Amino acid sequence: MRPSANTALRLASRRTLFPTTPLPPAPTKTTTFLSLRQIHHTPAAPATVSPIHGSGPPPEPPSPAADNAAVRLARRKKQAELLRQAADIRKSQQASSRKKQQPGQEDRPRPRRFWKDVGVKEVDGALQVHLDARPLRHPGTKAIVRLPLSKPMLAGALALEWDQLTSVQQATKHHLIPLTSLVCRAIDIAEDDEVAHSGAVESLRAGIAKVVMRYLDTDTMLCFAPPPASYDVIEGKESLRETQQRAYQEIVGYLTSRVWPGVEIEPVLDGDSLMPKSHSEATRAVVEGWVTGLSAWELAGLERGVLAGKGLLGAVRLVVEWSEDAAGLGFGDANKKFGVEEAAKAASLEVDWQIGNWGEVEDTHDVEKEDLRRQLGSVVLLVSGTGMKSS
Image 1 (cartoon, rainbow, N blue to C red):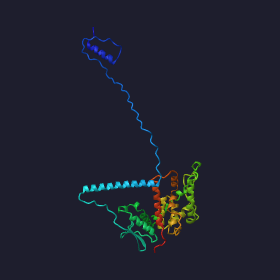
Image 2: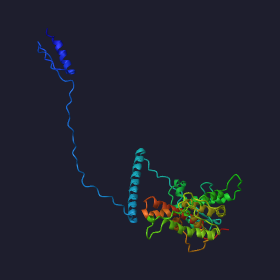
Image 3: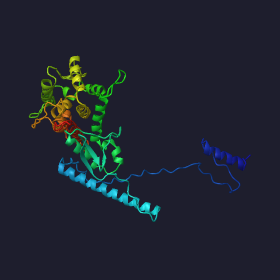
């Protein structure tokens, strides 16, 4: 008996899905059957190889920027000119936008300072800075700022500081009036000295003395670098340790012989030690007593010098050299040997030594250098004078 057509189709499908031993094709009676196809077939695609494009010869190695003051100055002038042009463009755009928003109204200028002229006048035995007819006042107490007659240079610098302000808003920013802040600090100390303090309230003078005494045991001038190894020695160049020892002998020798006779001030960090050592109680008592006995102008100047140079000894040497009050041992000496430049170098010995070996970081080291000299210069202006005290 022959199999039917449906049975033959099922057998053929089974052989396709589950291949076994081949069977002879079944006879068919009709030609209407569909041809059999594979279930899935994916042709293999050949890999596409991207061509390699050459980029030419390698770039030239970078060349270091020229360490030339004239080149840096020209570059900064160009940058300042670009910033000025951008500011002019912004101002013109803002003016045009305001005119569009409010047609028919004129562009109102920004409020400027209320004074035109700044001058120094002598009033009732003291120097005063006048903004037109108004005397300069303390920003906190609103009292008139009065300077001794022996400080005409300080009064002139204070007037110049206010003459450079362009608006009232700038007068409220302390970083734009640093000399005014320093003068007011001295005035606050003098006024606080006249107030009777109880045991629970610390005087302003005692608080400043406590702060500056913290820098005695961590003074940068007393922290010596370890002795240089054989591979660190550069022929013809002074090592960092030798530079520190030379500054130490000059400044500390002057202080221990003329300011604090008999007091021993030794390095607090020497050799390979890691933890600084403290001075003796006798040394600290002598130095703190000297600081507490300073005048209000000297104490304010010492505080500014200590915080600027991160050291006590250099600031003391600067105040002693230029003060017109009791602490001024060099008053009246025209050939002063320790000024702003010497104090700044003593406060940044290690930084200057590293710059001499590895170079200066632009807009960092140079800015810090000028800012340090600006603050130490304000100390000289504050404590110096002509010696002519007001009655």
